[in-house]
Image (tube, rainbow, N blue to C red; front, top):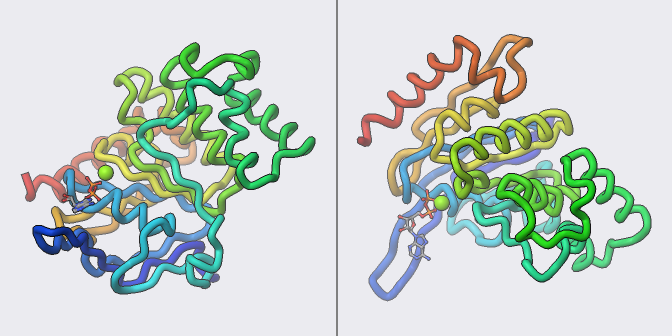
Length: 255
Ligand code: ADP
Ligand code: MG
């Protein structure tokens, strides 16, 4: 079967007046349809750069990125990108915020409006359609940002530290929440995080990067028994700490 995403020998450098900074070197991996991948690595190792390349916002200097076996630039709306800051517009209501992407793509009609209302309902935001973002908690705002991204029905969801601006307690809840939603919808997703527990609680595989220039250090498959499926259940599963120690060891050599 053709993978959803293939990243073949991708490298990228930033060029500035001070010279060249090699951010990523020789990155290769593939992601199956419906798989949830987490990418972890030390700060500055090129994680955000990698997601930006996968979103098509930046082009690799070397190598190629394929979606469903075809070059990424042939399917410009294949990916949905969600960032650390929720980027909700404060002057718009929650409904007009989640509808923004569809509005821009001129796809807001009776049916897509109905779908948005259903998503607001299943993500616990019913009753807040007419509220402004400032009236919502951090976790609710993140869920609104997720709806806005999912409304465009991206084939591949890219998440760049989406929970890191939240306080610890909220982060746990929202990560469990969003992880479960994505598991249920069977979305292919790539989550960048510096939080190892977060990665282990949601991912099918974890890609560990080296310090800059980011290279793939290792790829660790994560499997939990059937009764430890949700992110929160995984955290309470005995296997969790074994995985934590394995990833920790891989990263610690750089400490
Ligand atoms: P991460 O997300 O893993 O923290 P980034 O992908 O943001 O890392 O950055 C990777 C490296 O590239 C960093 O060391 C950073 O200093 C460098 N970098 C990022 N953006 C630029 C830029 N616009 N110009 C020059 N260097 C950059
Ligand atoms: Mg980053």
